[in-house]
Amino acid sequence: MNAYLEIIRPGNAVMAVIAVLLVMLISGNFTLSAFLACFVVFIITGGGNAINDYFDYKIDAINKPSRPIPSGRISLRRAGIYSLSLFIIGVILAFMIGILPGFIAILSSSLLILYAYNLKKMLIVGNLGVSFLTGLTFVFGGVVVGAITTSVYLGLFAFLMTMAREIVKDMEDVEGDKNEGATTLPIIYGMKSSSILAASFMIIASIASPVLYFIGIFNILYLVPLSAAIVVFLLSAVSVLRDQSTINTAKVSKRIKMGMGIAFLAFAVGSPFLAAIF
Image (cartoon, rainbow, N blue to C red; front, side, top):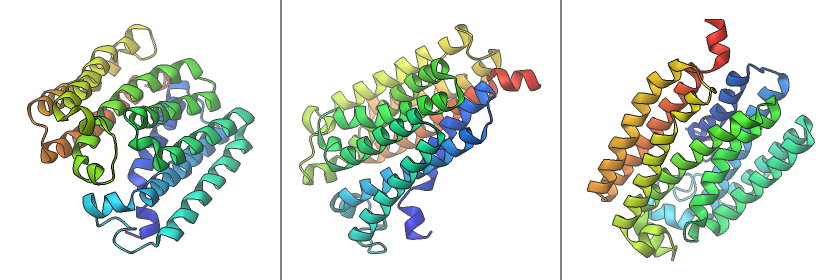
């Protein structure tokens, strides 16, 4: 894969875009502004991934040496310029949609830069920052398509699951983070305590997610794929509580991501717009 494409982690960026697409689908609002919002989210998320690699190149040299910067395929200077250019383009496009989307884009870009610079090294603050940004992506979509209340509910679910995954990822990267003097949960409070907290977020999200059906946001079809997602989350919670090794936390992180993908499918299947069509 081209290094400039790889450094923005297009898979993660597309996952962020899916948040906006889901809000579009639920609202049935498919305007030009909504599709432009998808492009904005992709660009800014990509910029966030690139700036994260820029500041993390020493850690990645230990944990993930094949990434573009530690492998030498992109210089540190070019990666920094590239990421800042993506942020600027994303913010300009967001202001073309509207004033509020523009300010949300500035907020998101600023938080992504601060996260990469030092927030991620601060106890729990970095985890909260990433989780907040994930939830904010749904709200951004809701602002653009006029479905703010629904997007807040979806954003809260995304916040809970992202918190779980962020903690598990910290457990996976604990050795490299120690070398960089980071103060993550696993380093300060240990792997067991971190696993309990991560599992708690998974369990809370699993218990709370059916509420979206009972308050009328989704139809009953939502519960079918959601059940599979809940099984994945609960199994992941049990797994990380039993085994906090680097190998297992890497597997659990991928399972949580898979569970979130299934949950997103549930959002789409249970949307009123699709129900009206079929």
